[in-house]
Image (cartoon, rainbow, N blue to C red):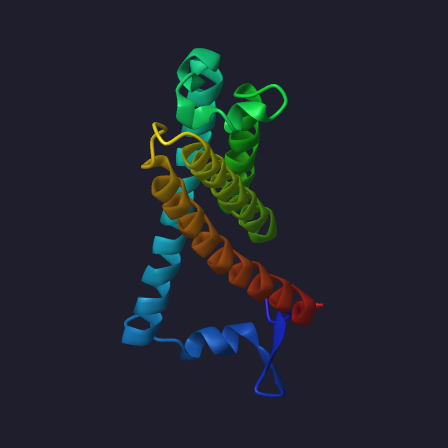
Length: 171
């Protein structure tokens, strides 16, 4: 058991020794543990949202993309199914990554979903500029989604970095 060693403040210490010094009732420790739990739960929720949104776009088909606001989005080859399949895959990657504590994969899934959302938002903006009768509300909605996905990406990327750093120092 005493084989797991990490570098702390320039000194190799036994992980068990470190854990003895951590008081689980300590407020800072408890706060960090709650933040980690909230980060993981938020990631699950947004990954689930991406998967459901992707499935609904696939099932809805072209008839659901018939309004003027979807004109630019429909220019993508195989749209709208290609939009749906992409988001579904990104959501699955994020969900599986968080579930298996593979935070690099989870962060890539969130980044891709955020990029997808921004692309979708821009498609709606361009359509509304080209056609004044096109809906304007989709642009801020998908921009908000993009920002939230990218915030989760940022947190998951930090978790991936911490995980990689820990694995390197364990070697």
